[in-house]
Image (cartoon, rainbow over all chains, first blue to last red; front, side, top):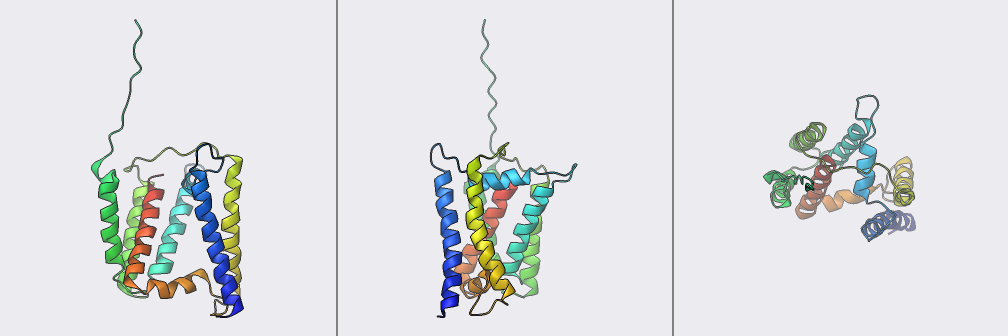
Length: 72
Length: 135
């Protein structure tokens, strides 16, 4: 395995591991870090006029993720 | 005479319970994992399941959990893993997503060829989508 590939894999692993640690930290009593679900819910509240822009964006992005990994 | 405050308890609907939702999502994931990438059936299935969840999320048919009115300062910490992921994804994408500099999806593709891993990943995607619909 090349060094560059190893660095890339390590980078993705660190990012995912950090996210897992933060989610764990958010669930501790009195934590100031919100859970990832709360962050998503907060973003999804964003509306422009009566258009739920945050919700449309989040659903659209996640729909695309599924298509990208399982269909394309 | 002092009156006791009225207590309103929301009874969860049967399909809203994990004992119903988890098996349904698991069956949908197992079916979805049968379709190979780049096939018409895989496209139709992911568009169908994702579209149904998209529609459910925008409709008012599913009771939603209350969202926080504001996030604490600790929310900024979420930028750290997201930024690291984005830097590597964008960097490898710009470099052409080669074996030397693979994007995340290029790394995931061989893993997702395995039927079990594909089912688990599909389940994760559907569960997260269902979680978003509920928020």
